[in-house]
Length: 79
Image 1: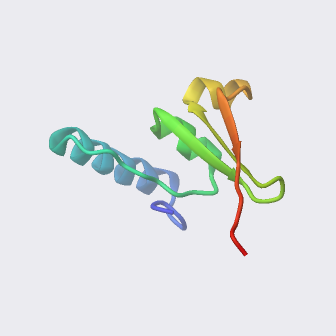
Image 2 (image 1 turned 60 degrees about the vertical axis):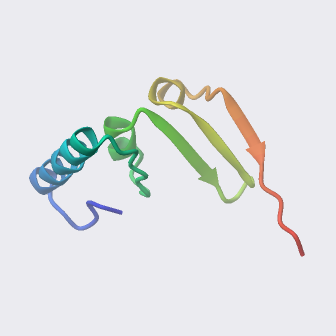
Image 3 (image 1 turned 45 degrees about the vertical axis):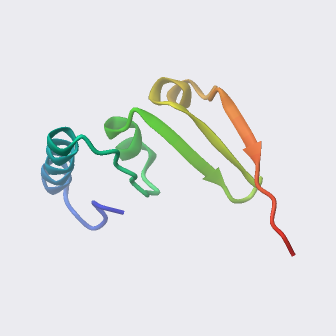
């Protein structure tokens, strides 16, 4: 979680730095966070794991905010 335990101003500075590096170096950034508001604010695409229901939900920021991601798929494990 890149901005855990950081105030709002610190979060904004960190995320701006990450965005600048991403654009300059033409990189994809994978952010892991429990803070959906931070993720939706700074992401084009989102993949969420729902531990209790056992699937990933993926989509664009708008899909997630609308609650209607374009795809869901199950997670299975090999015992």
